Image (tube, rainbow, N blue to C red; front, side):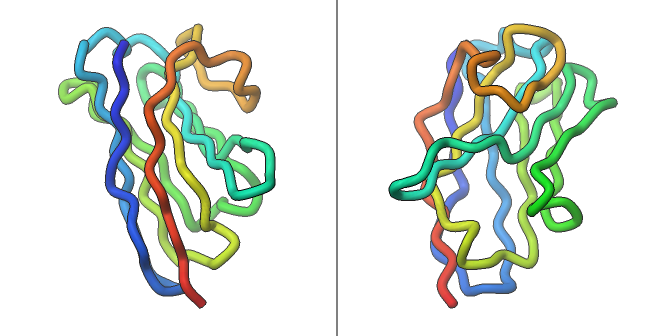
Length: 123
């Protein structure tokens, strides 16, 4: 597994962004996947997760209804569609592959991580 996250940027509050995470080695199609974020001075937190087949998704309460995680197994890519963005969503966003076929809210359950992409929301 080798993950690369991209799609971050600077947008105004209320705007949208779509993050993508591609596995260049194409070996994570049977793994659960997750998105985490880390803001300056804060711990890394779980944002969203998806099972290997996309049938099960989980979200951080504060992003429910605004963020949508999805995956395209044929493209070995996981997406995080973010809408109605708020300044408190500002962080570096990381994608990760789970040790199992399902996602987890615990970062300890992920053994492969992408390099992170910066998301900055201006007020």
